[in-house]
Length: 260
Image (cartoon, rainbow, N blue to C red; front, side, top):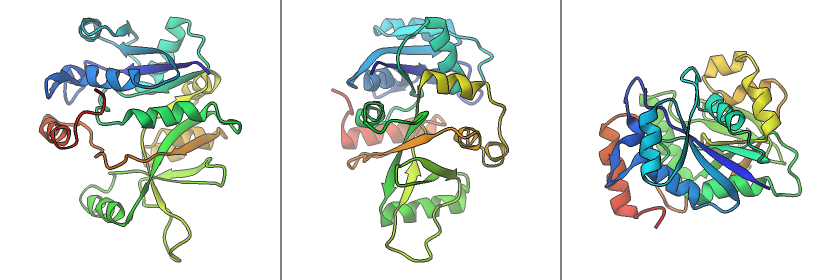
């Protein structure tokens, strides 16, 4: 199995222009993400994809391969497909690894890559989920009291194929002890034909209702395989505002670097 990892990294963020180049504890956000991707086994190529030459120049300064793609790409998924097409790539799978995912452990990406090599690999898309213990579930409920759209949960069948994703906490626990609650991690791996099909589908009713792009795949009969991962005590966080940088830096000081 050959895997292309694409890191979509827009310079022109409406909230934080130039975000991929922001410094986090002495290393840019983009270089951190690239280092995480490079730490995986089984990837044949890691490519940064952007609409701005400044990102290309920055990527090349630390030895990364980078490509300019259309500024009209509406999201990272479309930019991944544009990258695959522009490269004339022949890999068997494409991973979409967002350029701000600086605290994603490399073993999460590895689990996605490894899932393509499993004997039962009849799926279109792979995406990770993590089980929530009681404390994590309480934290998620508390978070939703302030920001109802924070955090996405997933339910799946016995083959771990997704049944649904929601901003609601699923399943509703009427009779405890039968299953856990799983939080979705917004990373995706695609077979080339699945990615091609997905980007040519119209946004679907449930996708538009919940604001979750993966529902477009489910509504059109595509198979989304979940892979269960463990953060092994690492803290998950993202950079959505400049104030988040200090939070991420504090996590790195406390927990250490993900990649040496």
